[in-house]
Length: 123
Image (cartoon, rainbow, N blue to C red; front, side, top):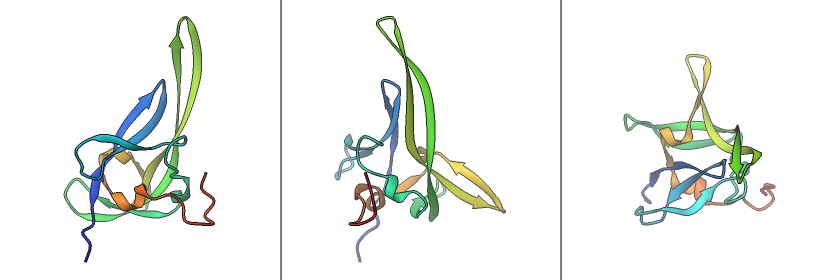
């Protein structure tokens, strides 16, 4: 049986564009791939359940949704509006849906490290 490898994703940004990075396969450094609309495709996961490990060590699932952020970046006296899309998680707790920031849980590496399956319409 293969061990289920959970990792902590880190939220980052580049000139106002929000994205996530995952540790490399050895778990020693970040930035091997980014989970961003312009990096590794994650849109094929929207609406699906992915494995998570909560802060107390229990494992479960959460639904992937699209979150959005908008900010202003200044460069040499010019201001630019920057819009980002990035993944978030939703769980239902006692009948209420709650959005969970991706960086607040550990996620199953295999769910996020793969691209869309053939025919799933990734980017």
